[in-house]
Length: 232
Image (tube, rainbow, N blue to C red):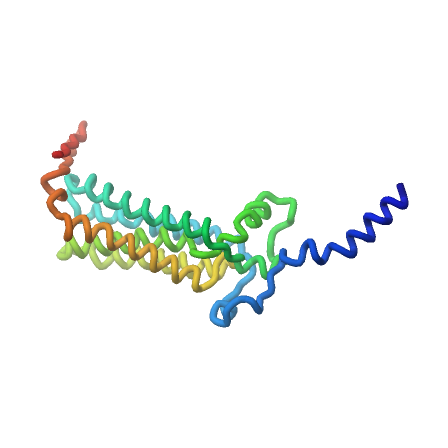
């Protein structure tokens, strides 16, 4: 048994560098631009980025300040399409494109290997591109901007609601980089994708195919009831 143990130990020493060579990637393989903004993992900033992401994604709720209740269902339906396209694109791209997250270049910043958080981080280590948090945050911000611009341009709430949406979205992007979860190019791509679907879908709905917006879907809200009318 001692001989077997000794052989296993020697083989482990000889082959360990080969087995674990890819666990810590080489920072020099990262492009020069992204390499300037690489940070170790920061759990606190990561948690705050969750909050800002959800805040930005929910920013279209501010449209209710200007939109009458009869418009809420139609706006919600269009936002559902925007959010679905953004999430679907995020999922497909992460499945097809593998990129190590910045925190994998500094594994010393990760929590203990026995923790649940560590296992979650390792499971997502190749999902850096694009930034899903940034995609969903900018979807909400761009949608808020688009709907106010297209349907309620004279509303006194337009500037404030748009600012709030983009403030939370921008904070999300910065926090995802600062927390070591993403590279700058990850969040730039995420912002572009989220903005595209956040603005494109409502534009198509109310500019290219506007006939459905008012006379196809109407909602009546009363003290004790909500009535939905859909004209096919």
